[in-house]
Length: 325
Length: 308
Picture 1: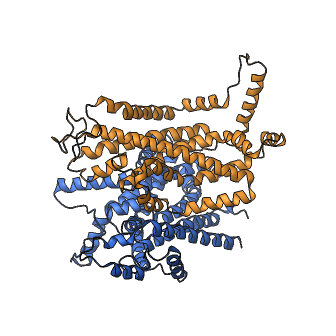
Picture 2: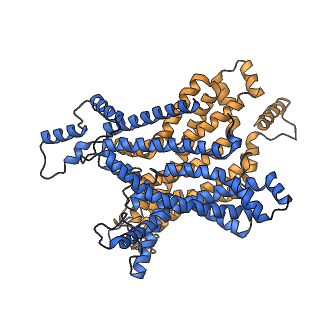
Picture 3: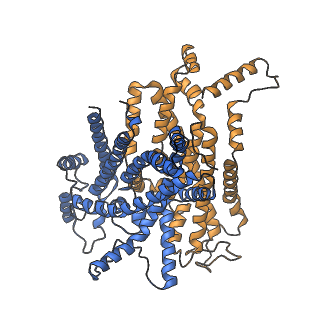
């Protein structure tokens, strides 16, 4: 019952957030401007007819457009984009792109972060610990934009120094490449290395710090001492008892981060030219695509809600101490 | 929290007894200041930050070039005795525009952080103190603001605020940063309002609003200070990211974000247009983060970070 009420509250919040974004976009963005540069210049009637078709005509009262939009939303349809294509289809394609990007980025970043953080906690105040916390602190102070750009700059520099295009940094793959399955796969990997690395570095810093703190909490606790007192080796005590317990909050944190990242990698996607959900945020605004803006906001709101909901549930499931009521 | 409250209470007592007492119990602020300055990280961070502030405001005076001035004899020249950090594609002296950009980034960071924390404190304290309907409404608004994609909203609103200058931009950035702190403040207020001194004030007939501003919020000062510091660095990062995509500070104003956007396009061929502004940004954020983390360790008893 509690769950149902919470979910209902979520749905209302998501709907309101999307409505707010739609109204804001519909009043400030100007789809008509897209036709001003067109050659041959379409007549005003033609533009009006086209905008009517897309439900974007600013001559129709906002309330009427909104009512039409809500009617579509009720059936799960986000309407048409400015190019007349279905927003739903584009969303499906872009979610796939984003998933391909963040899956490797977050998994690589989180695993390496967890390993380094846990090891650093075991060797607290030794050289390794100091070096890794220092590195994490440094990375956390560098904005994601700067990480992505710097990697790109370094890649260009390496490419030019070696004279070979080792790294690709524009788009997800080379269009029109005819190189068979393995060639295409190689090409995709070439393109994916840099953005994945850019994401992984940031995640690495966050996770290593988080895991180190969790591990330090656990290492001082009674049950680890008991485990060692009953004759387990340090290694066994750390792996079987300490690390396992310390992983619980990290796993829930990972769930949360993953959900947020689904639509939150705007900078990395935009800088490396991946047409995922994140870069849609900017693309839809630049092309005055009101329906797409609303769709992106809805998707982001769902991601935030789902991320916090699932991480809560996962936490309660993994850690019996949290299950209070 | 109750400790500091007792300290304040005893301080006012000694004050009433004449104030000539040599063993004066230090007030809350001197205690806070003391713990702050004992942290090496805070000191280092403060020193670096002060250096940057000095560079940003005094540095431009040392250069022979003006902010608006263009040197039409040299475009995209590397650093030289004439142009200390080189010039950009329109012949502007990079030394001067980088420092002016640094000024803007520092001001925006500080302003946004102060506004954000103030809003969070007020919203959280009112929700936690009054509970019931006030709490429901305020927390609901908070949740809604959390769900709204802030970057998207800021970018959509951008055409509307383009001409109104960077102050509006500051307000908008602040409008999307207060939610999580507000939730924390609310939690603390709920426990603080059960303290004896709050009851005492209430039974003496002090109005709720006055209690919130005189007793509740001051007793959360350590949390709020730490939070404000952390907000400074996140505001600087947000400003940079938005400006990088052209949704932030507009020409003729410059900030580190707009400079990085300009420099990144030619970073390989003309590295000086990229390296200096990016370096300054990283140093600035690191200094603020050092202060923030040091403060958290010093002021927040719940903080478990055990860094060297």
